[in-house]
Image (cartoon, rainbow, N blue to C red; front, side, top):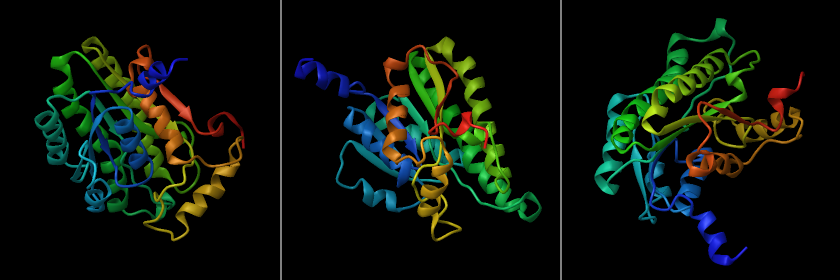
Amino acid sequence: MKNNESNNIHRDLDGKVAIVTGAASGIGLAIAKLLEARGAFVVAEDINPTVNGVFKDNERIIPVVGDVATEQSAQEAVAIATERFGKLDILVNNAARIVYKNAIDMTLEEWNSIMDVTATGVFLHSREALKAMIPNKTGAIVNIGSYACYQTFPGISAYAAAKGALAQITRTLALEAIEHGIRVNAVGAGDVVTNLLNTFREDGRDFLAEHGKQAPIKRAAQPEEIAEVVAFLASDKASFLVGSIVMADGGMSVVIQ
């Protein structure tokens, strides 16, 4: 393959405009960096103000502090994308929360906080993104799911419910959006070494790395591995994928434990 052909492949998102939620660390950070490297302009949204420092030296990535569970944040993220870059081509709904508690021990506040970020935030950002994408008759929405879209284990009732909702939001929006040239898909991520658990356990990253060994691949993923799947789904290479939940979980969802 000639060098210029190889470069074109790796710039397959050239000129695209993307929003990535939960972009301050982990999977969201890896996605924002990869989309930018592939040629996209990115609005990187996170509730953590550290997102400002993470992207302060990159003119192609605009950091935004916002709570994905609110209508205001969804509207502002889309407005920034369209006002600064003239359009919106890609939305990646990555932000999520989790807590390990049996249902009997879980408070309503904890339940709502997980559902608000992991399911309602997906709905709100997708709704606002579709408003911007439909007039252009093109676009891609990629939701970050989990093997918890299908399977579960004790202690994650709210998270599993939220990821199950995300899977159904993905399928339903895919049917509503495809007539406008917009594809909606999701990635069913397995255990990934991130800070997802750090809000309630100090060994969160180590725990995820160890838990990932239960998958047939015998390890957890790195965020960059999930980002590669997202970049594919966001690109024209995935033009025939509509309403798919692409499992990137090291085989966790296909083995009986």
